[in-house]
Amino acid sequence: MQVEPDFLELLKILVRHKVDFIVCGGIAAILHGAPLMTADLDAVYEPSEDNCRRLLAATAELKATDFDVTGRHIVPDLDKLRKLRLHLLNTSHGRLDLLRELGGGAHYDSLVDRCQTIEIDDLQILVLDLEAIIESKEAAGRPKDKVALPFLRALLKLRDENDAS
Image (cartoon, rainbow, N blue to C red):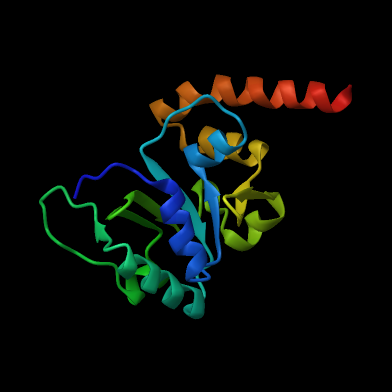
């Protein structure tokens, strides 16, 4: 399923289902002011049983299926949400990548203190702070992350300079 991304609608559905999650990756960087583009919404979720059930309900509303190069129609299930580290999903509102943890083993509980709450269209969204985004992209080391790092470091330096003045 290839659709035009509507990240705001993805966020609204996650919030409506009361999913505990943190926006990370490219969208988090953009929300901090980075001049980047991304094709998906990345979110670290809290892996408790109750939260996984709420997340499963949200993925059902989103008509989510695993991103599968063979074209199989595989829907998320509770057991996978509780156990697997990464879920690459196609949804009715674009790509959604759900992570139990970031690279280096950083999970929801260890990341909450490294977030800012950002208001988007009357939604209160937890977003990973800029320093943590940089660390996660350094740890991932993918080519697309290496390209983004100079922009993120420059943005952090500019923010720090503005805070100092």
